[in-house]
Amino acid sequence: MKRALTGFLFFVFLHSPAHSQNDLLPLNRDFLSAYDKFFNSPNSTVHTSIKPYLRTEIGGYIDSARNFLMVPAWRKKLGADTARDKKNAKLGVDALFSLEPGYSLSNGETKLVAEAGFSSHFDWKDKLSLNFIFLAGNSSFPGHRDSAIKYTDVVPGMGPAHTSKRGYAYQYLSAYLSYSPNKVFNFQLGQDKNFLGDGYRSLFLSDQAAAYPFLKLSAKVWKIKYMSLFALHADATAPTRLKEDYKKKFATIHYLSWNATKRLNISFFEAIVWQGPDSNRYRGFDVNYLNPVIFFRPVEYSLGSSDNAFLGFGFKAKLPLKSQLYGQLILDEFYLKEIKARKGWWANKQGFQLGLRLFDLFRIKNLEARGEFNYVRPYTYSHGSIQQNYGHMNQPLAHPMGANFMEGIGQLGYRYNNWFFEGKLIVALYGADSAGTNMGHDIFQSYTTRPYEYGHYTTQGMQYTLSVASVKIAYLVFPDINLQASVGVWSRSETPELSTLDKTLTNFVFFSLSTALWNTQSDY
Image 1: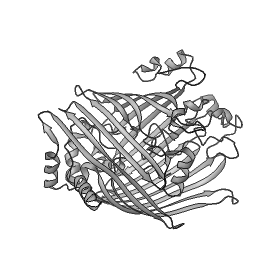
Image 2: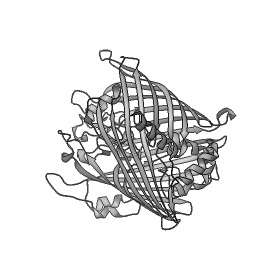
Image 3: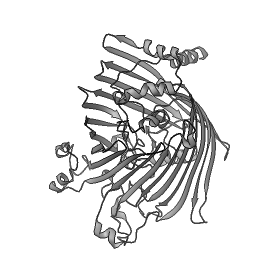
Image 4: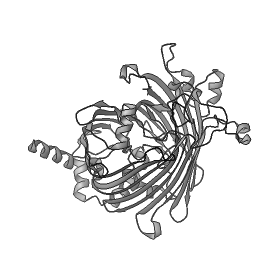
């Protein structure tokens, strides 16, 4: 066993294949933070709100980030030599794993996240890239994560959970083909995650849910990048929670990012969700929604459809003093007459985000800070048909808290060579559903079960104050596979407005050694 473990670690530490310019960078905040500072330059034309990034789009920044991360010369050479490279084709394999033991200071319980798998990729010239990731986990989770898994039967961000002796067994599968025939177009087909926005959270599309099948078409012309995403999601709300009882649902998303000036980016978002076949009718992928042009809401109306449609607007402004202001506005329903009436109509379903990032704060190199506020009204993202809500596998596709909340995020990070320090505080106020009454927090309930038409307000229902504070110190061992060793502590509390209800508090210490290629979905 010891020899096998030694061989495994030797493979992980030494093998890092060269990548083509056509694959995608990992959707991991710590990994991408090394690039964000460079993207904030007025001379940068990268459309940062569309993630994951194509390596070809940020090629000029990769070397800067690698030098910034102090990658030694022998490591760069090794990364170039270990891939099987024959003429224009490259083939590589990496081991992936996550080992995170932790201890609860609140109840004395010991938890362990244990995941292992591999990734492989094949690249041809700078036009075609094939990537595959498989990960299997058998883990136990602290308090709120364990409760969420029991409620949804899904490990957040991963997939269906199956009870095991340790806690839960689960798998994660991601695969995609990326093809760029020229410098303008890119086509992607596979199963993976996407993220739209410049914030810590996204009100448009986040990586909170499990990977899903999709086809993505994008074009970059002049100062504009345009994306069409066609996706297949799963409604897992059946009482049995069995995979064979999942129902299909489809989504089409259009997104346009425009660099209006060197310092201002404006974006437009549009999405529509419709249900697939059920026991009453058959409906597959509606070809009418293959329309690649943004603002297809008229198509929906022409079909006499009651499908779930969204519109959104975003912006990012690169300000002086190495700062950045960004925001999003999401419209699920919008009736100006009802908004002006200020009577709290239930269908006033909107939300907004406003954030500020600071780089080289106080003129200290690599000291960064973020402040962000998110606000979403009750019943946003939900639908009359549960199958048509804006969710996948019992997880929201946008903000992890669903709806009926307001949230503030404060983040401070400092990077020195390959060392990284982060302190984070999240405080949220939300209104929970109670006693079978749908107050608009859970997007997986039908909005037809609302108790009344008017008098709705954000955080209505059983009001809770949620706070999550964390401190983490990490060392990036190998940037190519984002192998991190980290140690940290977090504290999470939920305090009800009613004194008759119990407050929950978890204080948790952890150590982690992980090839972190995605975000851990736990800070909510």
